[in-house]
Length: 92
Ligand code: SF4
Image 1 (cartoon, rainbow, N blue to C red):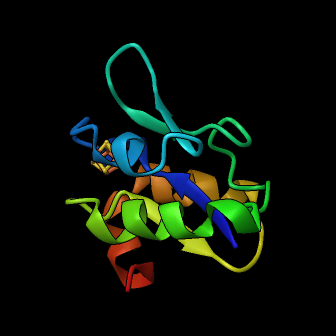
Image 2 (image 1 turned 90 degrees about the vertical axis):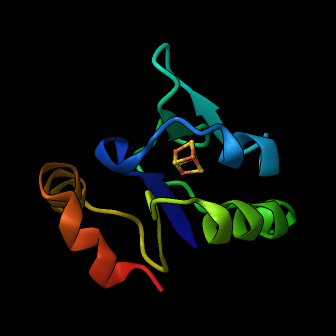
Image 3 (image 1 turned 135 degrees about the horizontal axis):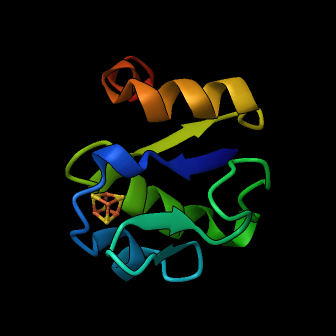
């Protein structure tokens, strides 16, 4: 499983870093990103971190955390960052 944060949807609430400190960190403005691969969504989430990932993913108040079974492509990154409303379709 792969994950990344859509910066435009993140409200810098701090919750994901609280739930999954080994997966998420923040830039200077408090916007979250995935530490594994600098938010590219190309590094698989280690099995040992899946539980904390689920906590962060299910509790993010804005749905800014995406997940999918394949690595995120450059086109997917560009699309979700430019048109964040589309992410609701991927978010269950
Ligand atoms: S939980 Fe969601 S909104 Fe809050 S900091 Fe993390 S990605 Fe941003």
